[in-house]
Image 1 (tube, rainbow, N blue to C red):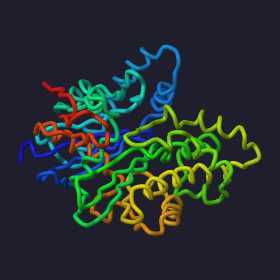
Image 2 (cartoon, rainbow, N blue to C red):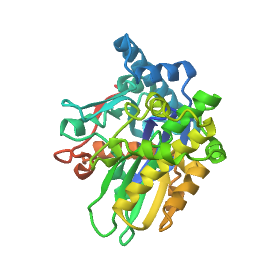
Image 3 (cartoon, rainbow, N blue to C red):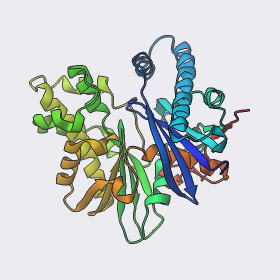
Length: 369
């Protein structure tokens, strides 16, 4: 069947690889056909991490990395289609999130910036690309994030079920689906895996804390946890969004300066609890009980899941696998869905979530021809 698929490309705040998914749709309901993860070469990852911080020669670095990421997104797509044995002619469009390098929506002139040149992706794959999904929402006065709640509403909402869809990447975000109404809300709760990943990379040279084992070996320092949770971001009302511009390794090290008596594992445990407590506090503000479905890398952190369940005994805390969607691929599928919405001329944002002045078709079109 010709022109029946969409590709979704996602590289998140954690920068732990490009997720590529091949998706077909029955109305708004997606079916995952194939998936692929493309690793970021170490040199490229290091350059991206530098670009996310203020520095010199940023414009040249930005231009180079924009093209480099475009080539890598194209490579990920081609590998995905080869794995699925699907010809490019069968793909309607690629929906590419890109790689966020700045997210600063709260300035007087707020902006968000994702790189991974869509023109380069189109040339590398021979497929039309839809990208730049966030900036229309920002132009309308919104945060440009999170965008996934609209997708979550369409695929996960169920009458008479109070559900929270919790995506834990480098940053954690919540979508609240009240079940009996359309009053969907969503926002970034704060750090997800980002601070824990940065700490274990710095201390042990490991990319992430597998299953949360290192955090489990430590003991959380309550004084430090209380200090971290006193950050003004956690008291903000929605709409709100954040990123590594705020919660990054430099910020964490600044906070740690008062707690030199702690060993490294205790710090890892405390950073994990910062994630868990900030999520739990927000969940309890939304509803006293319900169902939480976790996706993103955090779904595979056994210690994180254990601590969330302990903090939220009145909630059922499981992964989106129970709703029929592999937690690793939810965000990639969401951007395939956003590409489909653009193709059909349908809005992709929820103004109640982002703060935009109205609904809008999100994205821009980059033809392969």
